[in-house]
Image (cartoon, rainbow, N blue to C red; front, side, top):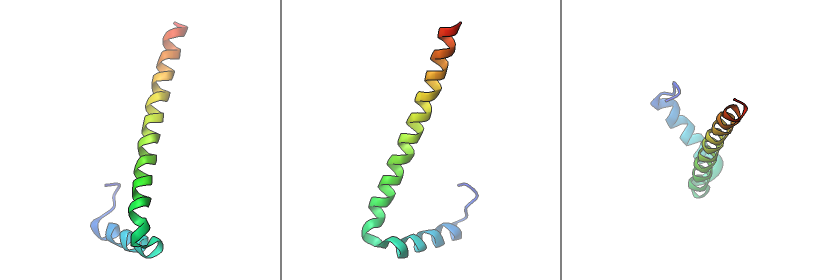
Length: 58
């Protein structure tokens, strides 16, 4: 997973828990997931728009 080992992932989670607290961490991760989903959706839409523009020019 992106070249991150289990130890690094565990350290990252502990630091995130200390910074944001256990109450806000689930909300933060949920929002991060939604952002990633919206980004992927936007990239797909952009690709289909480019394909449609190319087909219209031909």
